Amino acid sequence: MAAAPGTGPAAPGVEIRPVDLAARVDEALLVQAAAFGLSRAEIDVRRPIVLRHLEHPRARALGALAPDGRLVGFVYGLPSDRAQWWSTVVEPFLRAAGSDGWLDDSFVITELHVHPDHQQRGIGRTLITAVTDAVDNPRSLLSAIDKDSPARALYRALGYRDLARQVVFPSAPQPYAVMGAPLPLPRADRMDFRPHAPPG
Image 1 (cartoon, rainbow, N blue to C red):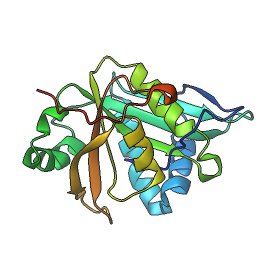
Image 2 (image 1 turned 180 degrees about the vertical axis):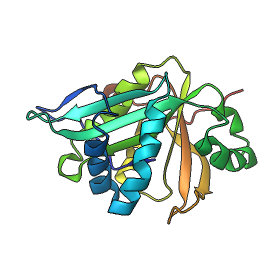
Image 3 (image 1 turned 135 degrees about the vertical axis):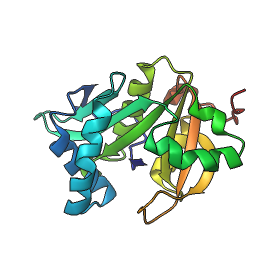
Image 4 (image 1 turned 90 degrees about the vertical axis):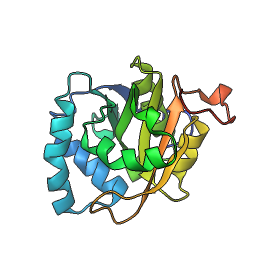
């Protein structure tokens, strides 16, 4: 689930590159906690989940590194799998909206977070476009809190559209929207704001 990425060109001095996110999981979770307002207990719950995701052979992860090597943002994702927990939660909502075909052959952005001190500098945009450029799936899925936000505005600018809204995840305090976009994602100089038809 994603929160508050940036929207402009990539920030000067910040390097976007593949990282061993499992080795830096505690650093990544501190970034997520700052971006998403997580408690220590919530971080502890997420740690084994993130590590399990990253064991997937087709998981892809990128980090945004400050000049001093600190992780200031990250993204990771997995190919869609209807047996995965996330898919089992969102599938009834997508089916009700006639969009459950998106669960087949999509790349799911599992987490995308940028530290608040580095937001609105294009880091989130660079992370999500770079990680989706590296996969061969024809489309991408993600979930975001179902309210207007800089993150949702960025996703729409990148071609993501709402596939299902008011999606309720167990224990989540707010409902989410599931969004999908065809790949590759557009770049800032060729944004396409036309609506995209659902697959098949």
